[in-house]
Image 1 (cartoon, helix red, strand yellow):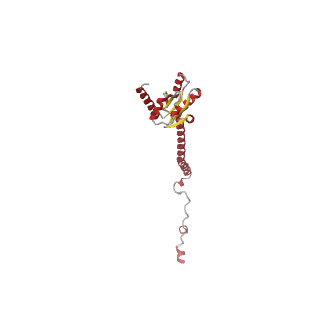
Image 2 (cartoon, rainbow, N blue to C red):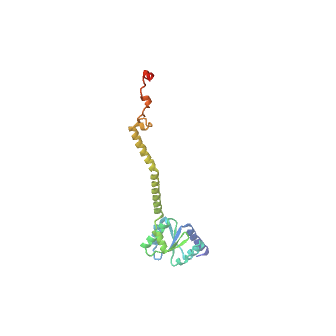
Image 3 (tube, helix red, strand yellow):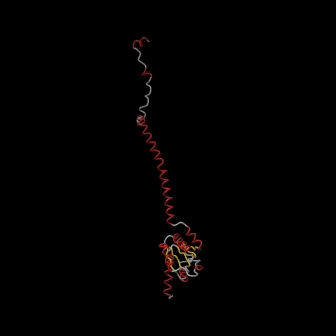
Length: 204
């Protein structure tokens, strides 16, 4: 490869590393062209699967500061540069490798950290971002519902109490009249006693 072409190829790989959330290295030896096309389709928009020469990948990795990479660059190498859901991309590679044993997952890079093949497998076992977001939304909705119920509980109780008082007031209007229907207090003894005749008062 001519020097300008090599520099351009390295720059392309560097750009792929920098613009992706992660990358998974694979050995594709034994896969047919048709199977490689199927793999790319299965990854969809989550990853760009590209065959990369080991020397170019090595130079590009050094330029972006990725270490622990050289040991993976043996044999034919293709890299899945993940642009979408990292977990979904890892699942896609794992599932395809199960159906096509010729595809071997070597390891990967996630947020600048090195992952071996087992760690990539663990990543694939996680729930996707969409599922996790759905669960989070469900948990938030449940929490919000509980909060609303707590806020509404005193209001409901007050409404029930008000309704009960209103029903009782309809039966006994004196409740709302400040106790006007209550028995009147006894009159004073002076008012109840008849006045003495005038002549009796003189004789006394």
